[in-house]
Length: 219
Image: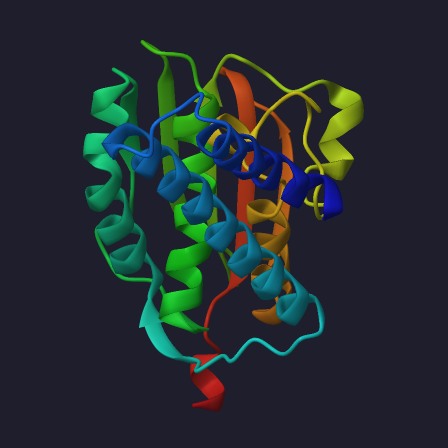
């Protein structure tokens, strides 16, 4: 955490020192740069806090019977432009009928959003992303797959570890702080779900969420 905080703080310190020394004017460009670094700090601190409370099991969940297919479709629709901007083809295969699960809709949206954001961030331009959803016995399965670049096999077991990144050189501007997927894992566990990752046949990453269907007999 200290390492993650040190980078934006160092940038802020350098910018302010340059202004004090008269090397840089405190104009619009400097103001935007300082505001951007402060924004990164705010996001990072918020992420660290949310990760902490999620690991403590202190995140608030308001679970109710919800259509997972409908939730997934809404998040996909909201991200379509993000994929288009990088010329990444987005293929989806969703059931025509609803699949009900006992979930906190906002937390499920957060999980799906984090996985899709990772796909947009890491997939090369002119690549491909594929999202499939189906019923498998008593579970709802959602597969997220994307094309190159891939992830080394020895790093796959650690992708959901907090503050873990495949490349140490990846900064928050491109790769985040290694917090998003850790939060996703904690959200999945809170729903009695499984979240796993392995190499995709498309050449990138394959993430699978397995969520239990609502027990209709007990409702």
